[in-house]
Length: 298
Image 1 (tube, rainbow, N blue to C red):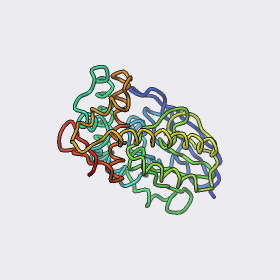
Image 2: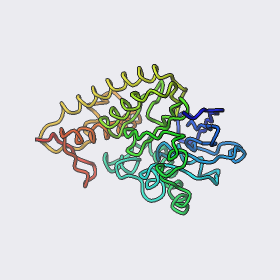
Image 3: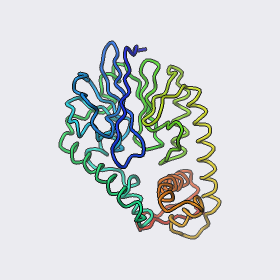
């Protein structure tokens, strides 16, 4: 196992985040690695002589800092992440997807939606011209040579990767201590996290937001999150019938007393529950209309 000689955590913030995004400088005997690029430039980043940047997933708050610092380093990521940040984001994620799925954005949330979309576009415009800087994680020397373990962990997003270096797990947005977590696929997420827990060579998890947690704390947080997500999925499944209905109608079912803004935040979770039920063969989604429609699979 590669020894971690020094580990530095950076916190960056950029609107419309409600709390900082974490990046980690990991110095080993062989490499100087930056895990995730942050939501805004990391001060004096070039002075650390970074060999490689490893991205956990494509969301702008983990990448935008690289764009604005214009760091000249090899950036390693999954093939999906590379595609999403340099060609086209997925049609089922982000505010464009939510607007298509639910038909409208509440006025109270419009500014947040536009800012987030603008950040995503900035990342896309930057890396569409710098694809030669992006390397598939399977060809990335620290991973290829066995100094870093890259674990595919879809769930929060379908491109998510966690990294294990010297007893430390860098988990991006797969673990979110003290908070909830939006998921694109509940089944994929549960499988990913059980796989991560079954890997016994890490003791501390370093998340994309919030404080580090021990392996035991991560397992406890995950067990509580699993329970909450399955309850919500079951509630949605039990509310479906054979009629096509707008997906947005089920916001009232899952979040009956929420404010318009909170309900819109919950919309991404609802989208994930709907995709999960379709994945499990329980529901059907019609995505060629706006808003999207859902029904029980007969």
